[in-house]
Length: 116
Length: 116
Image 1 (cartoon, chains in turn red, brown):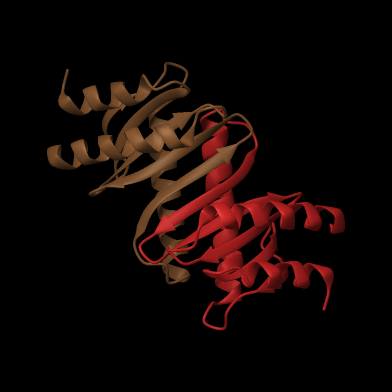
Image 2: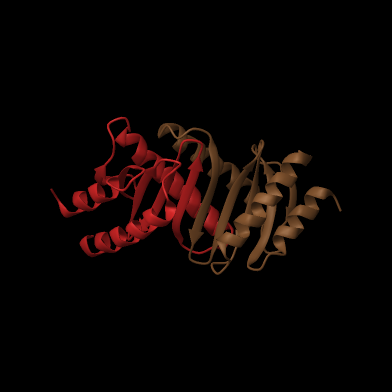
């Protein structure tokens, strides 16, 4: 297994995390540990959309470079974190603890940065 | 001053908060306490964009109804919270404490829900 896949599988192993994926900013999937019920193409497309919307919003509001985003919904949370020219996406349940996820996410981000 | 405007001004008064606005889901501004350097039209347009992107993402990933989002950038944070058919937007600095803001945001959301 590649080192990227290994890092993503470790994120997926966190309690309450459905899966994780690393997507290049134009939508290319660089690695994924997503569950079977998730359409990979849809995730990649969604990331590009969120990224564009976020970047435009931060630009219009003079907020500087996009760094990360969290979307909370009725059935779960989606976390988007920039890693160089890529976005690391983590899909979790509502119950998942953001504190624990963010801690492991920051370690994963550092590890990925050294690989990319 | 209307009650909505009053609630938004109270949010703006929080340390580190640049301003707040209440926007109907199709982009109509229902109330605002935004600083002069912020283009109101742009904020309304951005909210619709973020909302569409978020809703599509949560739908594709079977995450249920969109609830809220936070975007963190180099120079600040933007918080989006649904209030019935509207989105309450709060623009803050990087240093602003999310704990304090979220506490006051939840009180503001409840107050707005009783008015809308």
